[in-house]
Image (cartoon, rainbow, N blue to C red; front, side, top):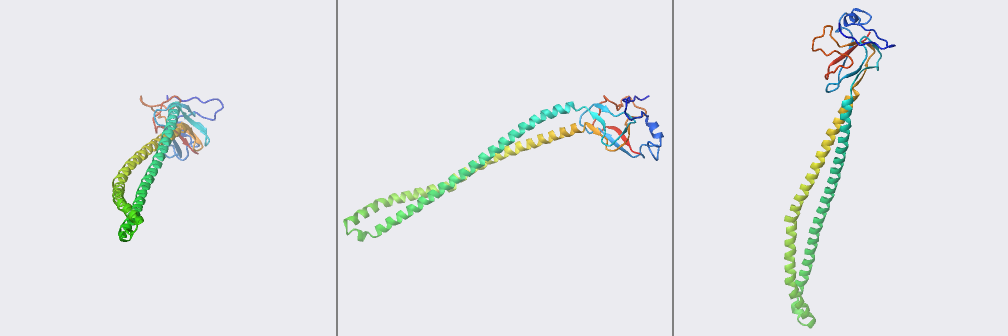
Length: 270
């Protein structure tokens, strides 16, 4: 004879075999087969091999929302505690990488601004040299007039001395400006882009880890919640035990170890 779970005192339940339940029309209407009866299947929705801690007795009448089965969640709770620590660590690392990215972005912006200022400054220096060189050339162009006085001669002498200096300074400034535009700025931009890509990649990686850890935490929380199974409808409970169990049959009872998606019981409605 198949084992049955005893009924606790005061509980509304009748311990019946599957064949007897199906033989009573008031319990399973219209037919003598479970296939034709209106029922809800209750399965193990927990990963791994959970153990049944509590199981409503076979043949019990239950109301919607009644606790009909509870699975052992101790191992899952330990995993959840560990995962919560990992989530906190992932959050800290993601936040640190985000702040590091902000620092790099600020540094990139400042470096670009500094480079633009250097180019603008050199362009301004060239304009000033151009003005000074034009003044010098205009002075030398009026040499015939200036040579008539001692003061004019002094001005001419100074202009003749200044002109080669201004020309050399102009050449140097243009060379420097070209180097800034064609070499220094592009090379610095490559370095800045590399630093920015690394910081973004680090932040993306840490954010991805946080997302995975958070999803794992939520999955464990869902598994723990599924360890307490409530009736989705009122009706009569029938354990998913065969009439003629084989040697490898897992008998549905308190203490039994289940596999994921294993059928635990059915609730039959009137």
